[in-house]
Length: 307
Image (tube, rainbow, N blue to C red; front, side):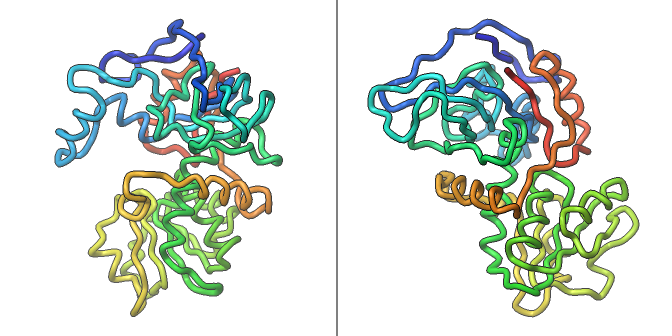
């Protein structure tokens, strides 16, 4: 099968298409024919090994000291089950699915991927294409996990910093459409209309205005990109308000929860959430796709069509 692999850290050019062995499902696994995957900020950072200095040692152990331990990137995918192991009962061949590969050594940037049936895997939302379904997984689950911690009630004021990214575009929709909050989105001028279309009532261009200096306060401030100093963000909170940070509040103790993927599917099928896709590339143009993600200005998600 075709896969995009890398055997050293560096710029997008370290990636290359290769023929690798097609996996065979174990008794408790399903074999997925991948139709679409994504390139996340996480994929970009693993490829280039651009991690915070404080995390350098542990990241090197996890990712690989001399070279990548997991040569195929790709944290999200959507596709069709081609075969199942003898013990599988939840799925059958032909089922359309979407999944997170975060806990199974990644591997979405390939034509096939095996996953355990009890992993982060669910039937694809009926109202999404495969490309949209792949884009829904990571940002959607992260935004859902973080915002639930805010105990948001209808009518409360919620500010989302970094509202045009993969997590932010989901957070705006969830805060407005599911929790019923009045959403203020912070992003660049180029993305103001996008976040308004997702449900933001107020929009702030961060290049022209510091939201902490406006005198406005919020019940929840959510930093969806972990780039705004927490001490400053606290100044915009009402008494008793809650500050949320994507790097802190997306943590589930080292394990993602399968029920969150089911929650996400229900929210999507109820019309409360839809993934935002910036660009879509074929697998053969994955280097160009990584170059674009490396610029740091993607709106929502960058998707790769595999088959």
